[in-house]
Image (cartoon, rainbow, N blue to C red):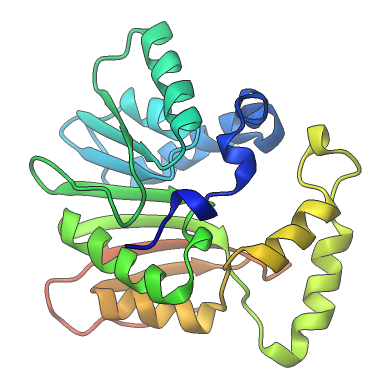
Length: 239
């Protein structure tokens, strides 16, 4: 099988980096907004949510206050340890921490109602993205929701120079202030973000109806709401 840990990003295996991860990403406030969005999509007291690429568990813990069961999955042992420490400190009883990747996670119990993934799928090359999306569809009940957020290039190759230049120029000056230009450059060299016109057919072939697709003004970062279909032909979202 593909070695997800080897391409997880060396910083995600570093305890010092993981310790400052929440401050760097600013996910705390953002996760509250994401949970409100999920609640609007039906997340509730009887729901099961699987967070793939859960990082330090910020979204998982925010969702745990709403739903019955949360599974926080991350390939990095340091990230899983950080989540376990948060769970223990807060005395939360409905969050399960699993060290696994998209390809190695084996869902146990009833099908999930929601799968959430943010800034993780890009670690997989496109072949393995397609395999991972099939696995996500299999763990969801019919009508279940995939909320996917990631770096996705929503432009055509001739436009790449302009959009990538603007993105690189938006980098912060220091790593502790956010993502720097050097980190963006490293992402382009070493990671596997893809075009939206490649990713979205993968989603549809896996059995999802892409209900919402928002690329933002930079057309670099995509937010998707996808519904697992019951076999009917999916419709394309309105842009």
